[in-house]
Each structure stands twice: as structure tokens, then as C-alpha cells.
Length: 210
Image 1 (cartoon, rainbow, N blue to C red):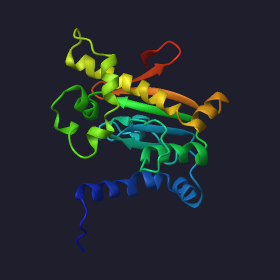
Image 2 (tube, one colour):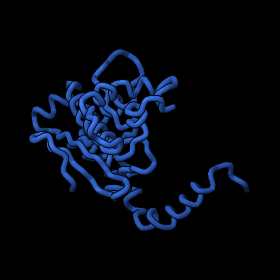
Image 3 (spheres, helix red, strand yellow):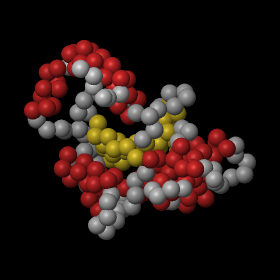
């Protein structure tokens, strides 16, 4: 029987069934019969090169992952409109009770580049331009003519993570839990080419390679 489905996915599924699923069948059974209990939420980019589960070698049920263009967290805005990232954040904090929220940016982000390089086709359209509008303010904070285009892009990518950390704290239930030390917020940036992870230390406002 011919199945109308991408062949690459069918092959990958066959490999998963014969490999990881076969070796962790009991774990999958427990997860399927119970509820998820991840302690970490990861807000990452949609970019196919920067998959959190791969980077952190995470097993099923370990990380609650939300991915959007440029790994942005919008400010708290209960206005009745569609807010997928905010809805996922609310679920992770209030229902799952995650203890850590990590915002992870990455190098050569197409979404960030769409804002830093005028004329990029991604900056136009019905949705992407509006979604990335807040990044324009971030760009202004790192506007230095002495920087190369690549250096500037990296700094904007990292500054955008810092901006999203600030936006996280506009959510009252995130802010309240952080104040009670029930939740910790983290910033990260992954260099795709080098495979290096950088983390942000808010106390000294500095990025450090792990």
C-alpha cells in the first residue's frame, strides 16, 4: 500500500521504532499512561538547525519545548487575541509547574536577520514583520558601525534573548513565582557552526561559553 507521506519521515520513523523506541519502550509506556512532568520549559526558534532536544540530548518527557520565529517572548497582553507562546507559557507555569524557563537563541537566525538587514523578504508579509516588530528596538541598542555584519547579528540575537527575559517578567504569575524562588529564568545562545552553548549571567550582564 502506498502512503502519501514524506519518505524521509517514514524512514526516520522506522529507525525510531527499531532503535530508540525499542530501547525505551517501558519509558514511553509510562509516559503514555500518565501525565507529562517536565521541570524545564524551553522557548526556542523554529530554525531546523537548532533543535533543543538534540542540543541537550533530551529524552521524551524531559523538556517542554515551544518554538517560534526568533524565539521571542511577547509581553503579557490578555487582550483576547491569539497568543500561542503566551498560552504555552501559562500552561507550563500554572499547570505543569516547571521550575526553569530557558530562552534559547542561536547564530545566523533568519528572523533576527530579517530585521537587522533592511529589504529582507522575511520582513514583509502578513505575519512575520509584525511578530518581529519588537526586535527593531533591540537593534537600536547594539547599533555600532565598528561591528561587522556577523558580529552585529550575534549581538542582536543575544540582546533579543535578554529582551525576552524582561518580557517574561511582565507575566504576573512568572514574576510571582520567581520572587518566591519557585522558578528560575535563563538565557542561552547556541552557535550552530561551532556547536557552542553560551549562557547569560543576569547578575553581571555577561554571556559566557559553557
